Image 1 (cartoon, rainbow, N blue to C red):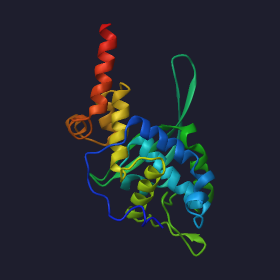
Image 2: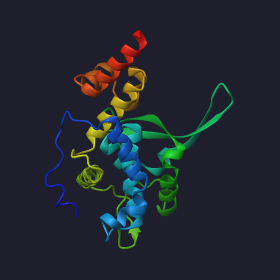
Image 3: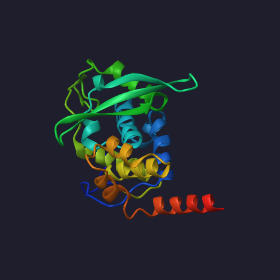
Image 4: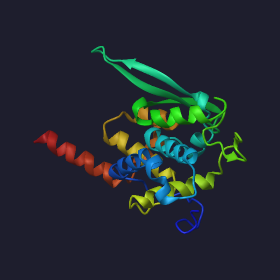
Amino acid sequence: MFSEFCSAPQKRSTDFVTENELEELIDFMKHWPEVFKEHFPKSSQRYAYRNALIVLLYCLSGARADEVISLKMEHIKESEYKDDNGSTHLFYTIAYHTTKGDKYREVVVRREEIEPFVNYMRAVLPDPSCVLSSTYTNGTYTNKKMPDVDMWKFTTYALKAIGVHKSGRHIIRRGYATKELADGKDLAIVAMELGHTSTNTTFSAYVKNNPELMMKRKIEGTKTKS
């Protein structure tokens, strides 16, 4: 299905998606269930919602590829936060399990960003303990996570569909970190979201030699002086 667009497995790269590319990908995925037949006529709505939710979680939480593919629906929970003005903000708290240290970490995503996709998957999966990426065979969900390479191919296809000629999922993780840091989020918070035990890892792997972030900081510094 994806062979004409992707011919090789993912390869670790220092590339990343820019903030604009990340926003375009998020918008494209939010509309994917409406347009997927134009791209893959033989695909199904259940896979359209599943794949879109997986990519949105990459974009909105900076998770590692396997963390999302292995995510169980029971680990996506509704939560809320009341600010100092008394306004209530709705979130999903998501517990990702990482094989690095065999532990869980929690991240939050605004509920309105992914709510239709979460609701759909909860409705079609037979049990909350099912993995989000569960494959569908002979009329039933297997509760076996999808092959990692399939998600790599789909993500690469989605990027090319919006005119971004880059490949993989790790570049989205880097793009997420870049955007959050450029928007002023504390380095320690971003490190915690990414599951890094040290901010040095976050800095060296996701900030160092990042021209976009450097330029944005330069512009902000100029505005402050003027």
